[in-house]
Length: 336
Ligand code: MRU
Image (cartoon, rainbow, N blue to C red; front, side, top):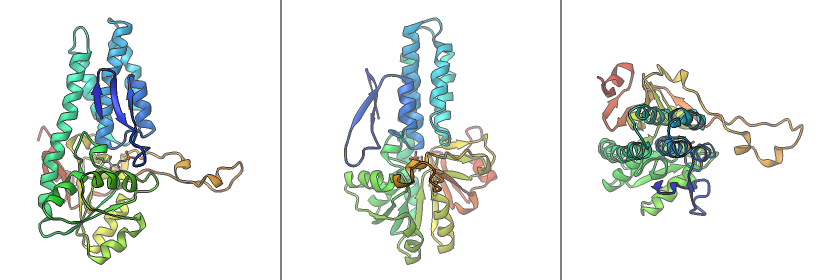
């Protein structure tokens, strides 16, 4: 993701790995649509794109009327907030941008662009720090399994869980496995593409092969990202994460969540209250069944919640919480 004079330049992740196509968005509504349609996806990347979307909104509304831009961007903020429901980084970034609007006199673009850029830069720094911290936990481990795509595509750069995998590879963890991540194939299309670009050898497995892989003893850690972490450590992430955590506990495999503190929602007490996005059944159902009167339908929740008691550690840029619960999580609060 890159900011330029014309607007926000996004790589269309729906087309990877077959085609590398960029598109530039010059309006907040365009960015909202890019998030909803998953041209850009992954919790931190969604937040960063939305922050740049607010810059575009302010640019457009200020040009239309310099005295009413603050009120006029309300519609744009609502459209961005309505693009996807689960990743809290989206709402965190929008609130951070909105809170800046009161401080601005004159043209809002320079100041808001500076804030959006700092959200972007801070995410990359957080990822680098988490990559090293997370990998340092793997002493003696030789194999890891990751789920979904949590790399440069899903973040400002480097990645959360995939950042840990990159750092771990440099430290000698050589057996890297990635799940396909049905139905959208974030693992089979995006994660292995990123690893291939970096020359990091990896093995793709079907989602349904994960428990068997754990049984073989080849992986000692599961490493995943997060879309929203509740105040008690319960973690919403890509559908299938919960099943991985259950299987990991059964097989004595450790389970790590890697996410910046912008992914923690302190206002959500537990995973019970996290809204789980359900996407259209066409993402799952064979087109054969999309015929009038057909009795077959698909249920397509795209996230699930892993209870904190199944998580061995949560790695953030502010430090690692082991055996997370409400009390342990408090150490991560900025006001702790
Ligand atoms: O539906 P997606 O592809 O946006 O879901 C992405 C995930 O679930 C990731 O694991 C999560 O956002 C963390 S990305 C660093």
